[in-house]
Amino acid sequence: MKLRSFLVTCALLALVSAALGRETPPSPAATARITKEVRHELLMLPYFSVFDNIAYKVDGYNVTLAGQVTRPTLKSDAENVVKRIEGVEHVDNQIEVLPPSPNDDRLRRQLYRAIYGFPQLQKYAMGVQQPIRIIVKNGNVTLEGVVDNEGDKNVANIRAHSVPGTFTITNNLQVVKP
Image 1: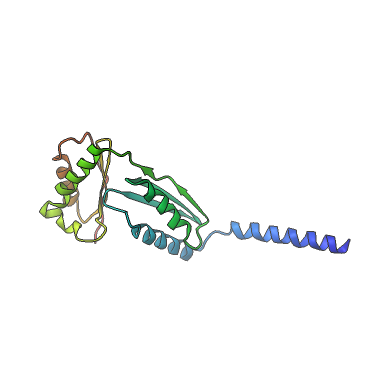
Image 2 (image 1 turned 90 degrees about the horizontal axis):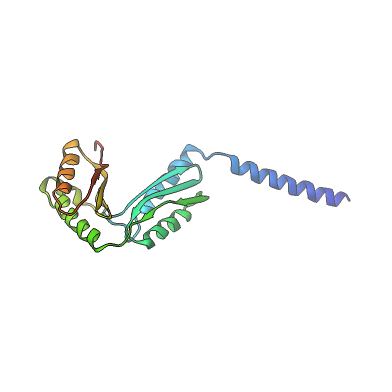
């Protein structure tokens, strides 16, 4: 009888300590580490291009992925690499896969040339990951990302409007001081 009550007490203590351990919020250092690793892993995805936009939000040990991608495999790859990060308990994958369309592919190429081929904006084409993201869905264009100044934001918007065949253009570029 004593052995049975001892085992029940041990089991209850184990359950309580596990429950209390999960309720402990992560330290700011842990959150910063997870955020840094999520960013790194997403940028290292092999097929992540200028036509994809992946955003993320770290809330404790949970990560929410959002944005738009052109390949279905990129959506699952993003979720898989984030799941493997130490400390991440749950990944909510809300990434939208853009529908395949030859017209949207044509617009993507034309927009890329119009924006990154313009002399004032060529500096943004130099890195491996270009900071201006071109999202095209059913002829509707959204510019995401960051630029150095308000002038570059406006020029990118004007260049996007110069491409024929677009229905609407939404300029969500953020100005970030270097």
